[in-house]
Length: 240
Ligand SMILES: [Zn+2]
Image (cartoon, rainbow, N blue to C red):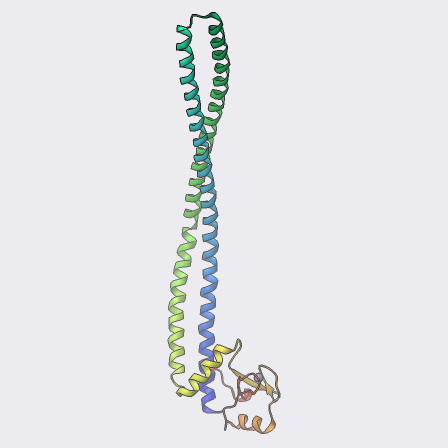
């Protein structure tokens, strides 16, 4: 086999090793995302509960202000009643006072109910706050495990990348550029076997004379259709 093919196959194997570690890191990232989402959901529920508690408190305060303003008006009626001499005017005022009293009583009932609603909403918010803490706490061992695993994989990736660089450095510059360019452009392997006289990637038939040259290792040839560099599989050796 062509000497450069041996080097190229080695680079390709190193690239595959790098890609494999990257794939595992990505899968690990996916696990972290699932944890983040669970925590995020719990926090959203908490935020909703907090907003509900604030809204309930606002409604209660508004009622309180309304009742207070009614009381001021009632006090004024009361004072006027004390100074009224005309019986007709007095009976009108008294009727107004009675009516307003029943309105205030109704508003006060509403206030009691709204104060209860505030207590309930605040209780619910506190419960959701505890739930967020429980979820976060429950994730600690898993996050620790993921952190350790990530550190391991990152070290593994650095090592795989270093080995890849060492391997790629053995190629001469034009060949290295050709390989890198092909690798970027292709989804599959750059170096593919010549299978039954055809390109191992796109199955285009390779002319006979070129097949024998590839087998003899006299040329470094690429498939004219997909650009893959072809190697004779019978002479491929496993990369140590
Ligand atoms: Zn091809």
